Length: 161
Image (cartoon, rainbow, N blue to C red; front, side, top):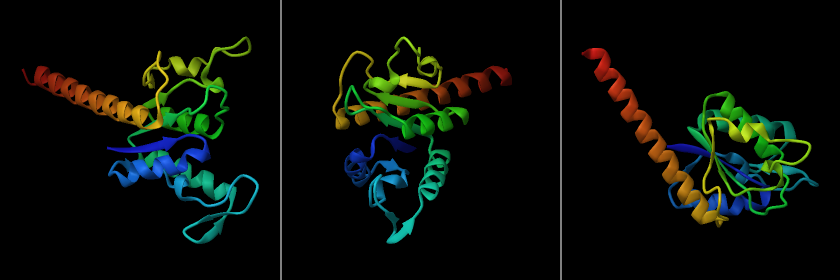
């Protein structure tokens, strides 16, 4: 199963380690050099911020689902919200690890999208480390895929009767 790992850029190395362990993280942003205040490079060549967004949206499209990681309760997720919306717009699940300010209801927003059927909290009442969160998200995704296959087989069996 291919997934897209979404988070703040300072978690890129953790996503690289997950990929090095053999997990199929298709997100190329984790290999981009530079930061929000300097030129950015991919594959040794300078690229634009528009190039980055095109890569991210292409990679979400290639993925089967998205794993979104919040590493701090006060984080403001911006790009990850866009990536999650892109995935959900294609009918793909988003597995969110931890809560951060962006995904908590407040007096100006009920964050309704977090109640969508394609949004899944990995452990809604726990704070998980990156590694534990990704492990649980992958387990949930595999389990969801297994259940979906089982339901498709049952539906096919009913039609053939």
